[in-house]
Amino acid sequence: MELLIRRMRQEDLDEAAALEAANFSRPWKREDFAASLDMRERIYCVACLEGKVVALAGLICSAPDAELVNVSVDSTLRGQGIAAALLKYLFDEAAACGISDIVLEVRSKNTPAIKLYEKLGFKQEGLIRRFYTDPLDDGLIYWLRKDS
Ligand SMILES: CC(C)(COP(=O)(O)OP(=O)(O)OC[C@H]1O[C@@H](n2cnc3c(N)ncnc32)[C@H](O)[C@@H]1OP(=O)(O)O)[C@@H](O)C(=O)NCCC(=O)NCCS
Image (cartoon, rainbow, N blue to C red; front, side):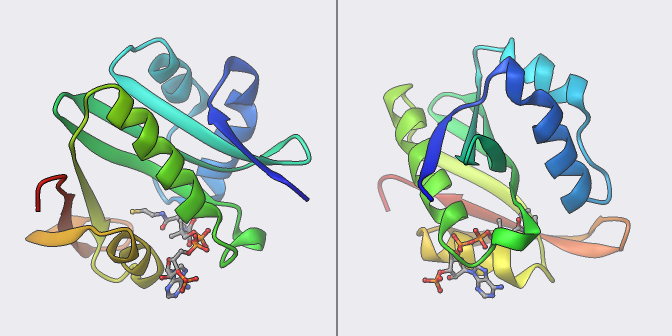
């Protein structure tokens, strides 16, 4: 099965919202993704297997910085390099739009995501106590900086 990675489109919205709902306690809804597709400063990409959206991620850009958001992979397809491939594609798209540095927030207990970001070169630069609810957790701030 070949993984296809590309920009998110209107026809992906239902599957994107379903994936988000399956992965997060406070999920974005279909209309949130739809609004993002209309905003030039947002870059959303999906990974598809056999025509089905199995992963997504987005960047909210304020050049030269951007915030990484909504990173998620279908729970049945994790551990196969899908998130790493998707994020590399997304970051190449961002670089072409003048983005050099990328920031994100992640739950302190979310080991798979932390390991993913560290593998991609992100470094922890901050911590916000009790940043998350449902369940309560600290937030870690990670940056990927081009010149470091
Ligand atoms: C975090 C998440 C996106 C990772 O997706 P994935 O496709 O399984 O990740 P990949 O297979 O591309 O893994 C890339 C690297 O991440 C790390 N990683 C991924 N899953 C891991 C796990 N369960 N335990 C430890 N490290 C892990 C590893 O370093 C891995 O590289 P390796 O395979 O060479 O060891 C996925 O677990 C997910 O969707 N989680 C729920 C949503 C979420 O928490 N999103 C992040 C919000 S900040």
